[in-house]
Image (tube, rainbow, N blue to C red; front, side, top):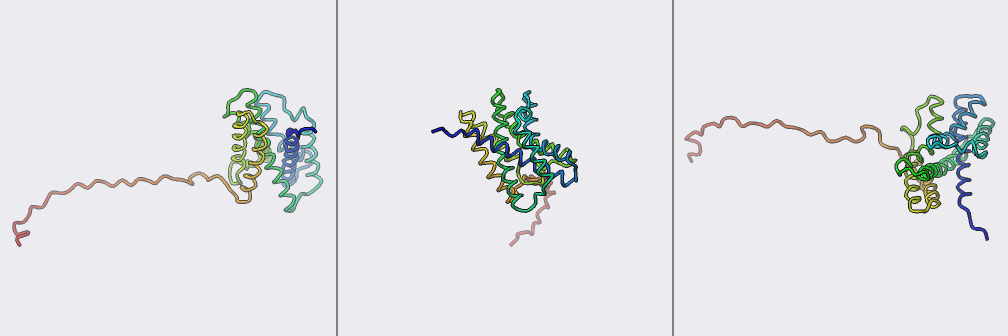
Length: 233
């Protein structure tokens, strides 16, 4: 009996994330009433931008250019978003689930690749976050929009940090498959709860230190001489 190979499951989640984020890029293109070229560009940027940016920083040929499943998935999602209007609660929920699953997969993949070439834990976490959120940032910049991870949206980059740290810890302990699985499950759970509960990081000035109140010291005045009749009784 053949043993289960977890890499295939991770690959399915990875490509599914490309499809989901490509559809999200297509939704942005529809909002701006772009033509077919705009749909393709935003789908590729949203679905593949983070991984391509990671590979460029690691001085490697982007996987999206060598594996046809990735670029093909982005093009398929662009075509679907262009031809169909994905509206309604079921479609939004399905995209949300696929998005957070990919969030964990991509953050773990970025951290693992950084560790694989000998980088430390801090740049590994950073590259994990870049892999997970870079595509959305590029997509928002292309449409002249402030990236959603900069604030005002449910936790996303913070969740990617958690997934990246988990991968760093477990790969360092010699269990990369467990790190990938834990990152996917944790990011999916945290991401969905954050969206439902609208968890956000506090804005600037949310916390403040109490201002000390300095009171000037009162110097006692000259003592009034005691009258001889005071306290006579």
